[in-house]
Length: 138
Length: 64
Image 1 (cartoon, rainbow over the protein chains, first blue to last red):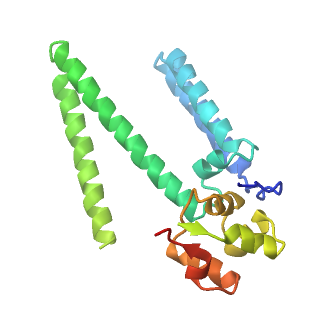
Image 2 (tube, rainbow over the protein chains, first blue to last red):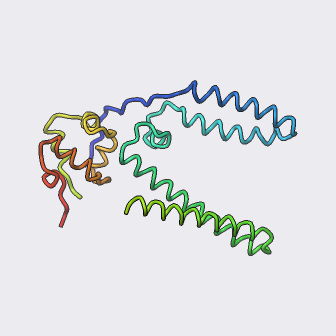
Image 3 (tube, chains in turn blue, cyan):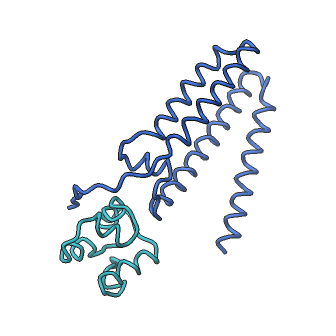
């Protein structure tokens, strides 16, 4: 049986100022540019999503998942988890692209060509990554 | 791969966090190794065994 010790890992160092200030400045510039082009409302939705992502990064919780995502003190197991998660995310997007491509074909192939090109590009990136990784590991 | 890390750690009176600090891995990684959810790399296995003054095969056992 496993026992999890009560002693927690040390808190990771945070660079709040380094992240928040450029973020706020960038958001202000984007807001000015967006308002000039009449797309401010669309930008607000994206800003909310980015704010949630940013807050997740800066959260003070001791969740190992968030710690691995941020890359705080990642050891070999953390690296292993990150690599597997990245591979699974890649495959999820790959299968989603195949699904979208098939749906587009079913709907009359209006945008099927575009999706086919994206799918091929994705597949080529995968092939390139496999070749690169194999070369480094052989 | 089975291992005696938990027994060896407790015999030394260490917490998972303390052993993790010695091996420069997280407490969670020590826990994952002890419970068999994670097989350490050869490097970490060697460092773990050396820390306890043992050979790798004395700490980690392949269940034949």
